[in-house]
Length: 280
Image (tube, rainbow, N blue to C red):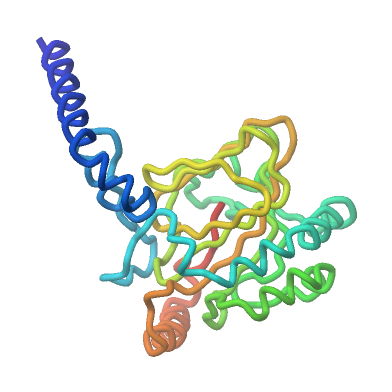
């Protein structure tokens, strides 16, 4: 009986979808897919084809901010300069991979005795590793100086800057046949930029209900406080540049408030809570 009921629901949803699509064909032709993405997502959720995910920061949640999974490209016109420099950035990354292996460290590095949950397989593992240019608000001079083009672009971009915590910028290396499990980031006051540099086939990334494949040289911006995960199903490593940028809806005053309040929280708790990190 349950099977028959589920099949009846599926048939009904399919019929409703056909009805909707017949009615909205002209609207789609007039306005295009990107302009309709939010309503399309809502309709897909109504039909049981997608879920609606919400931000779940592990530390600081700023309410009333837009919460896209992947953000509209037009809000970040400065990404074009990064994409134009991909050949130089990729060359710097590849040189690091050849010559600076000692500076490439496991991205997940929890101390003994800490509950690992979904990170048990990746903790202290080079299957997901990082070459940090900035880490928790501090420029890693030895590494950044090895990558002058990347460092120069980061220095003039709207990175999130919170004393002692942000920005964080690094080359993220995901080894062959590796999976980063579902997780969420620390705060929606900043978003995460991915700039793909070395991307073999069969590398994909999910944020909420939206799964995409990286394309070399094509950047995107996403909210890492929405559940996300990554796969490299290929036979060679994947490498991307990751850094954090302010949420574009925050005002200048709100950014300054965050810059001031977060270090105050750190001083009170004496580093007992995790309030930094970038993902992917």
